[in-house]
Amino acid sequence: MRQVFTTGLLWFSAIGCGLLAGIYFAFSTFIMIALGRLDQAAGIAAMNAINVDIVRSLFMPLFLGTTMAGAVLVVMGAMRVGEPGAVSMIVGGGLYVIGMFVVTMVFNVPLNNTLAAVGPLGPEASALWATYLKDWTFWNHVRTVTSAVASALFIAALTS
Image (tube, rainbow, N blue to C red):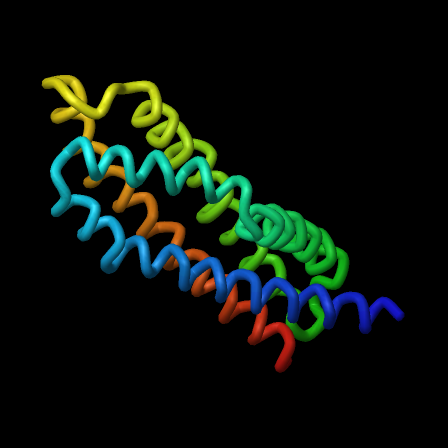
């Protein structure tokens, strides 16, 4: 029974991390670039609309579920040290929780909150928007890479 649970959790985590890596990849490679080409007010309005809608979408259960699954896999891997796949579970889960969830909470969410608090026009908005695009995208690159690597590590754990 324990092996079935572990296998299911690894599959869920591998697929969830892969899906989230794809979402983050889209933002890093073309969505943020497109938003940056819009005039400042339209770009800010569009990003604020995305930030409102994303927390009301199916993204959130996947985001939170994979984070919890990653944390559980760290613990399960630590309890199986020396067994095949344990190191991949520990590293994949730890990397995901830190590189995706913690980065989101410490960097991306505060940037989103600051953007939501500023009006879309004026000198303050102009300076903020330029910095926001650069900083938010940098941290999103981190989320993209760590989500993809975590997915690969969970797949490695499944195949070991």
